[in-house]
Amino acid sequence: MSSFADLSAWAWLIQFFIIVLALLVANLVRCNVPLFRRSLLPSALLAGLLILCLKPMGFFSAMVDKHSMEIITYHALGLGFVAMALKNKKIESATSTMKVVETGAVTASTYIIQGLVGLLITVPLFLWWNGSEFFYASGLLLPMGYGQGPGQALNFGITFSGWADGQGLVFHGADFGLSIAAIGFIVGSLTGVVYMNVLRRRGKLKIKEKVSERYTLADYETEGEIPHSESIDKLTVQLCLVLLVYALVFALMYAIQRLDLGDFGTKTLKPLVWGFNFLWGTLFGVLVKWIIGRLRRSNLMQREYINNYTLDRIAGTCFDFMIVAGTAAIDFNNLRGLWLPLILVCSIGATVTFFYVLRCCRKLYPGYEYEGFFSMFGMLTGTASNGMILLREIDPRFETPAANNLVLQTIPALAFGFPVLLLMGFAPQSLQNTLITIGIMAVALLLFCLFIFRKRKTKH
Image (cartoon, rainbow, N blue to C red):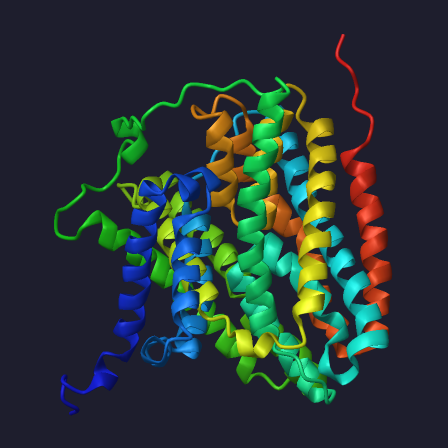
């Protein structure tokens, strides 16, 4: 048995020590420096940027392990989605159900627009500018970085690098995707704050009084739940449920990996399966939640084991760690020669996303279009928490349906966006496939627009 004094026994914990220390320092800075507080940048992003700035220092660079940070990003994404999927969610009416579905359509169609913008930039750059030093399908990482965040940007960035290597091309997809995700957080927060102040000066937004958080017992637990601490702590139960679901995710992916699926399965399907850990986590989470519900209704399970409040905290922690680790994993040395496509993809992608989401929100959310816009724009350039942060600035009591739409749109957005995710494994196989993907996405965008901007029946 190796000695606990051996640094190898502490290697993984050291990476978490770095993340935790950076988070605490970043939160302290954000709370006490007015510039950062007004920017609404999440503390997790500031922590990641802090590590990124310190990495060039020899001692600190040796401590931060890029591979470990990528692994933390990958698993934090999957565990966070599992925790979200296990939560008990309710939609109150048929009207709000349709609004949630429409919000999911906006999310999926924005992914398509971002993918189209990215490809319409990177394909010409590949043909006319950088040749073998660049990958034609890399524009598809824009919706992964902006729309999905660091976890998916990393997953598909690594997959794209493998495709590029197989074609004799050089592409550091992980760093390219993670850079897009980091820039997305900055764009979403700063653009949101600037536009919010513009609307306030024009008198289009009323400043609402902020209130301190006040929780009741119903916020922490529902009737019939297991006690907070008896033979097993309630937090322990929630962690066990999350890890149980994630174990099922691993079992599924490993089983598919062991199957003999031929050349197509080995090169295309299997890498996608491992990249979809968040999707399998969502599906298994919903399945386990359904099984628990059935056991409760048949009285085979007497107590409620799912606690929404604790699962929210677990998901929030996972996503905070994901953002820090994903940002810290960026290696600037691997971005040499990629600055021009990175700047073009991020800037044009942000501009198109801004105006498209604004147009959709004006159509879908009469009476709360700006609340809807800030929540959706924050999410579609960062994460759902970014959208909630922006929303709280103008709707601190969540009096509009914007927050509910944002939380509940995940499942319809996943259903609408799943075909788009499949294209992520099709497009990188060849330039011809990428051009076909552009055509498919254009048709899909047209169909989404016909649904979102359709005429509604007026009530008399």
